[in-house]
Length: 361
Image (cartoon, rainbow, N blue to C red; front, side):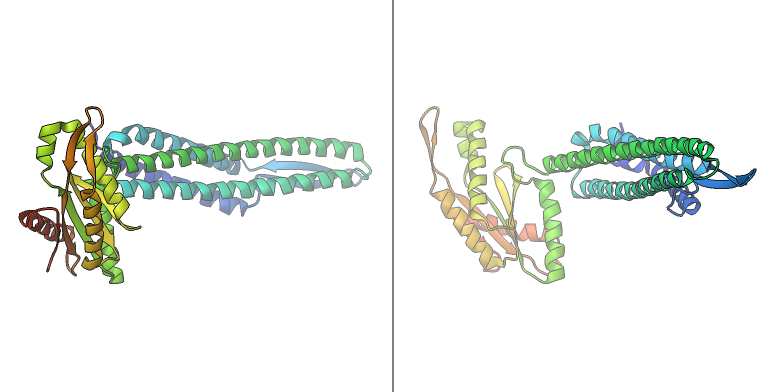
């Protein structure tokens, strides 16, 4: 079975070829029409007999077919591409790189759709203007010597023009519906990406979210020369609690610890469930002293909790957590920063637990 990356890569050549064909078609249409509908249908006059005037219209079939081809190609391409990819997203979307590529592709497709819609709207506007010109011509020609003949011909032309206008308006409506559908699908892609980056138990970010967020934070702090710190923490003696009260109670304790962390961090900090009962907190614009303050606030709040199992009224007792803090250094990557924070977490555990250890102190 193909992976999601395969699905993205396989049609790449087809999409490039299709884009080239559409570009050539658009170029031909623009060159032929100069953004005007005159080549599609041109009102011409010729003199007959004793000075009578006959008005007739000519058509450019290639230009009309080109306009129709653009609309059909866009609707078909968007429907086929997104209806093929969407059912496979929920189980196959990867982390930051793949999700970013999907989001970028979606934005580009939406942008191209908007450009084509503007082109079609311009043609419809030109069409409406042309219809008004025909109506004016009908009024003026009514006073000519052979007015009845001229009025009949012009009336037919006006009716034909009205039909063409309706067809163009219908095309724009269909394209607008297609754009709305693309927007719905893009929203679905964004929602799928959020689900993939979210821990199902606690609702905070998961390891994939950690990798993506930390990568962006390192780039940002390097470029702006601002501090960045990382806290890694976990619940002390969690295995004992899990063994004594069961995994369901253990899950509730993890969720409670997650809520305590979220209530203790600053705006802009990111809380991640790093694994099991272990959490990471990414703190942009924070040196290790600021990070230590956050860690101490969370530690005290969690320590103050007195837990009781509601169903059995059994007391779990007081729980505590330990914290390791490290600050980003120039040249660090994610792994180096995690290793230092994790080493300080181990120091906090070794020193008796229920404390915050900061790297370098």
